[in-house]
Length: 63
Image 1 (cartoon, one colour):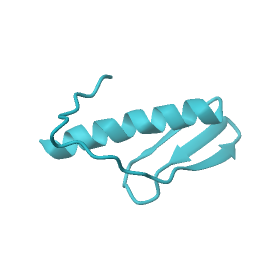
Image 2 (cartoon, helix red, strand yellow):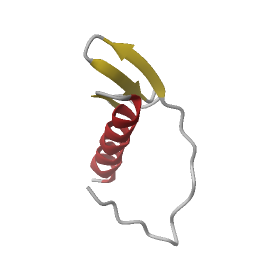
Image 3 (cartoon, rainbow, N blue to C red):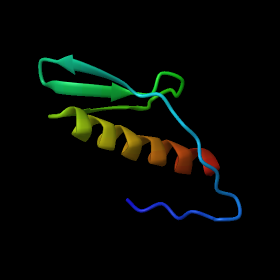
Image 4 (cartoon, rainbow, N blue to C red):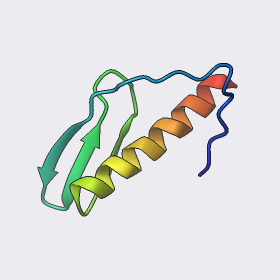
């Protein structure tokens, strides 16, 4: 899902992502953001999915 970035308002922010292995693969979560977690078969897939969830949370909060 592409996210449009307004260059005048954009800024770089670093976030911490915690990755944990489980029986079904990997879980990635952003500890300080409620609902920001996702699973994947690999750590990279879990991170990608978690960032996708984060972008949905950001869009929802803009509304």
